[in-house]
Amino acid sequence: RRGERQVVLGDVTGAALLVDRPGHGAVVVGADEIELAPVTVPGQLVVHEVVTDLAGAPATVEESQAGPARARARSLGRLALALEILGAAEGTLTLAVAHAATREQFGKPIGTFQAVRHLLAWAQTDCVALESVTTVAIGLDEDSAPPRHDEIVKALAGRNGRRICERTLQVLGAIGFTSEHSHHHFHSRVLALDALLGSSTELTYALGAWARATHLDPAVRASVLLRDPAA
Image (cartoon, helix red, strand yellow):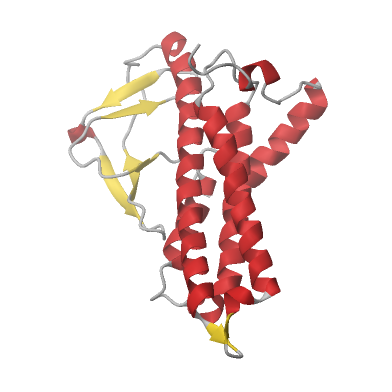
């Protein structure tokens, strides 16, 4: 509602920032030229809004250089977010498996019930699928990656991460909704990470429109998947 805002993740107190300005290059802003306004985001993330006036500031990096660097940084950023989403989602699955093994109903651990086992199996399947995709993506360079592969990986991570959190929450039941339980830390982190560099909903819609318009195949080539890593 307030228009575009620059945000930064992590503790950057006293650090200079490289602020990207699409179409106008990038500019380095010193620590004394910025103000960091804390943003409260669940999931134990440190997020600040960057308050600075860049109007008329000369570009430190010209657009001819910033453009390719921007595209590569966005690609690597989406892959990094997908991996962190995977880690957080796996954290919820670990909690749910441990709970299913110890929580008893009708004299049996709830992990022996078919409905609970199905939820855990679906969550594990989503974890393995996301791990497989990110593992392949890590091994791809700019030449071997298909068009917009970073968006595909990020969209899958957001979708699978959300589903894993929802299914593990079902296994945990009422205890999973309490603030004392750790599930909400992982779940909130997945939701926050999904929103960065394009949510699963946004990216899926954009990729669908692109695929319909271009008729390009977004799959990784078989020759790339079957090549010898040692070669």
